[in-house]
Length: 141
Image 1 (cartoon, rainbow, N blue to C red):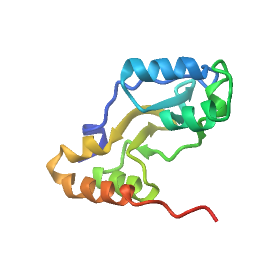
Image 2: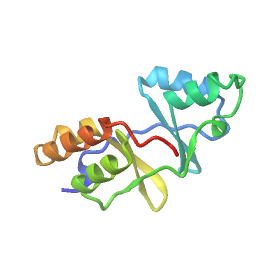
Image 3: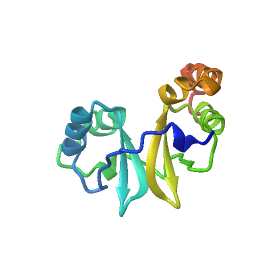
Image 4: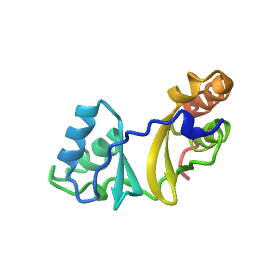
């Protein structure tokens, strides 16, 4: 089975010039906690609700600041040729709950731990990934 069989393909994104307010409003409208940031359909970053709060609000950035100021650039990504097990391994290794999927650099989907968990073949992989993601990461030294 390939990741393309279980990923969400109707993924909305924002441009790096979108304001923090625009991204937050879109996240609220879509009821999501992460927004892919694309330029000409190419994935260049991810902005999470946490990014908006900790890197934006807590740093007193204006609401009209571009999301490029708070996004994670060059995010971890999967490819359309990977298996669900490979996706789960990546997600566990870097402690993320959602993995953007690209094809030749272009955003084509996103897979979540929930997507992996609902497919019987990867239920244990998703559980292990969630368990590893839930462990505190090593403190920065």
